[in-house]
Image (tube, rainbow, N blue to C red; front, top):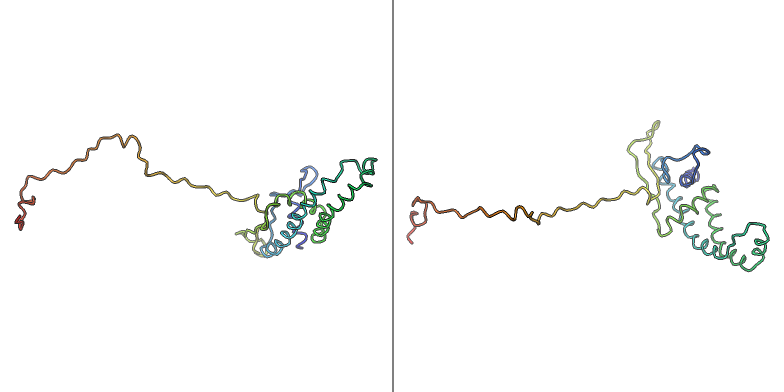
Length: 203
């Protein structure tokens, strides 16, 4: 069950033709399942990605010794019997071993091809945490089981918008150009409220 779920998640990233393939995923890189299964298959998916990511160096190293000749042609046979083929064979061996290891883990050749060609180069600079589990609020119909979304990171990430703080210290030019109409309060003519005429004031 976990192998099929991991293969299904890798196959959502494949290029499909709507006229030939009817099982086109609605969203690439995402599967909806129950919460316990999503947490259990997450480790298997990330382990496969790590194996594929580490084999990219060997695959690029082997491309320097490869040939673009047609298979079983005269040029290809000449390359096949040369020392360049021996160097290519030694360089590509770790990548082939990695593909066989992942194939033994998930059991789907097409999913392995999508993993090594499409998904692994995307996470080449990432050391872990390739997937995330998001719990859904609506349970599954029938048994009311908790549902969750298992998806690859970096594709459906939400971008945080940085809010701009208003500048309250700046004074508009219209307000700064107005004359100051505030004047000091003139003393009242009533001697009862002045300091000299206040009772108890002997100065």
